[in-house]
Image 1 (cartoon, rainbow, N blue to C red):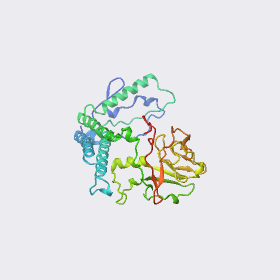
Image 2 (image 1 turned 120 degrees about the vertical axis):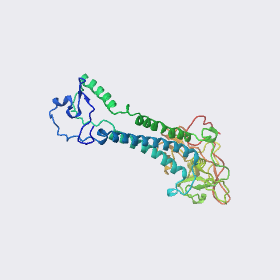
Image 3 (image 1 turned 45 degrees about the vertical axis):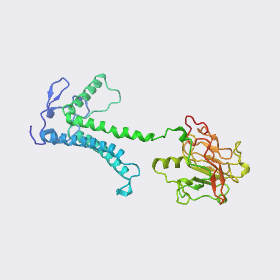
Image 4 (image 1 turned 60 degrees about the horizontal axis):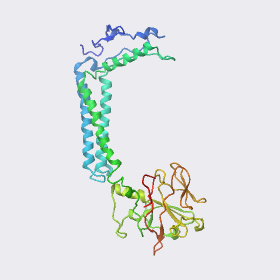
Length: 370
């Protein structure tokens, strides 16, 4: 076999009758039926791997190396997942933690190597035939369909995967090992006691805890709230300081308590409020507080219409009447927003009388009042 790129390989192509036909004389059998017998394709230039066995073997080793490196990177992802906790920090790029950096690099590198290896396999080792097929408005005859299936099978055989076990096995191994990160990440769907129904029904709110503005954490004076105002608020415990003495939370626990404790505060005419029995003293001069989490699927709500006292969930348009114990007046939500009982302390700041008396957020199994 010559190393000249203008030469052609000696591997024959089988004609429809099974007779071997050299590449240089092979013409598709449907060409005679085409309106243009010669579409003007340039002379085909064979790739180095088509005419040089050494180049072919070198490409095979390079592709296999990519797949092996992808396997190693996927295994390193699993090692990094268990080695670094979320929040661990060392001197990393842009202040990102060790867990974020290592997980992103190892998983990204594994995917990149698999994709690059497959591209090189297609460009360097798979069959390199130029084919022209005319399109027809009607379905192909059965003979053509059978010929297509046969051509597909021939193409798979020509791809050389069967006679290149190194490439085949390393590619399959890289894709198989890539499943390890996916399996490991399933662990994050339910960390620890996330399925504990009792914990789902409790929040960080406790008697005497101040209501503070979300994001900034400043306490809220009842006298500062104007008629028709809506304030997004949170528990004071989410902003621990030496003065308030609340412990500092971290990671998943912090995010869970922040999500469960989010509330909205509105002020309306006290005469407009229709309290449920036993909730007559849960408000302060027309100031009333509810969970910010929609009872449909848990989206945050805050689209407030002050004239009707209606609040709308932007996800699926569930609408609640805040004047009438936040009952559902429209949409898929199945129950009212839980109400937080509030009062004022000696300094005039809004505080909670206690926790919600029912689970907040999306409806779930066993949601009896606690």
